[in-house]
Image (cartoon, rainbow, N blue to C red; front, side, top):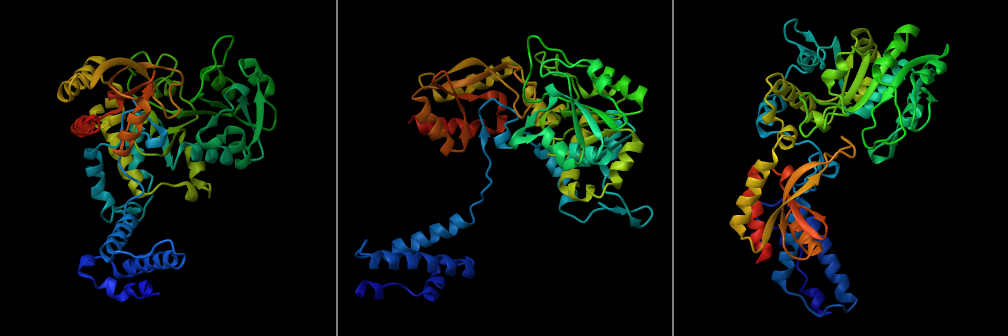
Length: 444
């Protein structure tokens, strides 16, 4: 076929001035694949001719697509601050800038500069964390599930860990406490009922093979009505009496008092640590507002044993995590909560959200949108069933159509009562201009 003779040679395409500066190896691969597809279409008589310029455009498009990042920034306009699907806690640029001084350079990650020998990577956050939490020692691993696994494997392997039936939770990604315990080598000893577990249930279950009493925070659900659980103080008393380890898996921990009475049924780290627990663990992201990490705090002798577990090398964190986490902890020590976006967004008043939404409404026109009050949740497996106030912009039009249009522009809103909403609870001020431009473009 004469049309086949028109197909350009790969080497000529690579040398075309239109592709100057592009990687020749990747360009040749893409050009070869594109021309092969075109040849197959010609032979199958799907096309009778092609345009050289359009072919070059297709190759250039495929090349650009190859280097387009899979991860991309989104504007979270759902109102859910700790949105699991969108990366949970944000990191302030100011903290990242400070951390980057270490991240982008060689550092004393595992080098003791004073002694001129190998050091320990966990020393760099331990002092700041101990000062913040007022505990004997701390250890950081790559997430809280790892913290749970490491603690159980270290202290309860082939021995019993007693847990309330009402606390055998499933966390994100179908990770369940019973399965985590089984994989760690710990023997699960369930006590109580789903809705009620008393101190006597723990006491009656203790035997010669018991290693610890474990309390797991119901982070992503709540039990209401005819229910009762044993508080941590009573569990700790039993541990002291029977020489057992008490361990509280908090899931999510927070420092300052939460607004909107959200802390009523959610004890703070300060409150829990007053009881001097043997071990606690919580996530570095979520309510703590930093990077993904599992923070273990408690008795030094127990932390030392965790450090001796060979599993720790598989669960350890890198310099990026440690550097950003350290900057977050320093912000906490300064009580600079504005530098922790999760807290900044949570502490925004209804009035301030209303002002921000009203400014945008005025900019794009009240005929296109209106400001409404609503409710939202924290997300990220925290503060279950606890709603708090928010303010949103209702963009007028068919909700599902608007949701798709804004999503294509990297703005993720939500639909409520057949209305498409842009919720300001989870939006940082620096994105407001982009939101204005997008609303005008879509409404137009």
